[in-house]
Image (tube, rainbow, N blue to C red; front, side, top):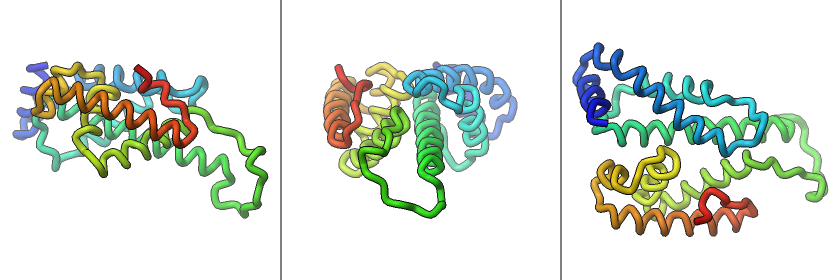
Length: 193
């Protein structure tokens, strides 16, 4: 972890060799994160973990305005990017499934099929946005714990808060997200604990 932080700081300072050394490590971690994201998707999802990594990787390498603080900060931003990529993909797919910009006709609600995990991902993103309006730190905790897979201690270090605060925020955020997802009629399996 210290090596990744050092390489990120060196890259931020303009050392292009640090970026070359960092890429294999970052790619492995991003792929692990992408597999974690994709594990929650429906079977046969057309977007694969490698494609998700490549999309995120291209966006991350072009980011020059972010002042990387450490490994956790980098992977927190990576988690946000992956979530946005998947949500955008799900929204586009939903848009196309519903006819895109074709002429719309009214259908009986009973005929509309539920899209499964695409709906879950969009509902989760909407719930996280709503929570962010109330308490942005709790959303950062969810991103670090759920999406990046950091421990309480790593999350505390990344966010510069205590482990106890991480545990309280995580507990609150899970309950809040479960409630919001249930309100939307989407099961929050990932947040049952």
